[in-house]
Length: 357
Image (cartoon, rainbow, N blue to C red):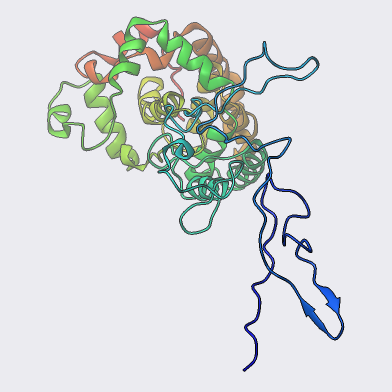
């Protein structure tokens, strides 16, 4: 019957001698004749000169006083994230893991489906999780420049493309809109408009009451302007590319009172009337979109209308724009009963010249 095979030599454990294995051969078989034999007995463990020390968990933060000279102490990881644009600070997910579980990497933790946190944040940004207001489209400066160039070309090609005019006003008003907002904040009525944020829409207007107002009042003349020119306040596009909620309301307010500017200035919606209103608004607001329309709009006018614009309407629009106070500081919803002439005098608009536009 064959002899039983001897047990394999055991590997040396930490704290044992390097040659610890078999008591006679150290785990190495000796050749005796044709056979190789080993007793397989393991010696008693010997004390090591550097026994392993158990590491405490969680590790205590090292103190700078006990650090060797020239070595900077690294503080322990703080269990809370710092406050950023993601919102308030919250607990670090690594510090909340139960015992026995560990994250793959502290530098880049993995999500449940294998994606990193950075990939999830990029996907959330692409999905529009950082919209400042409904319909907001975040854009970079390069994207705004491309949008401004394209919308300017289309607005010059077709001045009645209101969507292109709106995009041009949003992408180029980075300096003019904060100035208008500051003017509203420093005016009591304008400040109240910024706080209450009224809207001029068919859903907020009592058209029957405005039609019943006496002739010459702001409400009655405004309704007459809408009906004669077949326009509606609901056609004003909401802002999309303004990266500030308050500034987005400022440009929305400017769009909604544009028809009231036509009413106060007595200008129709034809090309000559739009050019005159744009000259007035360019001086009032400083928006590059208004300046562009005022400068290039007369190209489409006939020779007779150009003469009327240069001799009568343009000097009056410039003088009125410089003399008038900010037109966004008027709470028009509370002035429907006020006569148009009285409101012109209050704002500082001179009476329009008696010419056919």
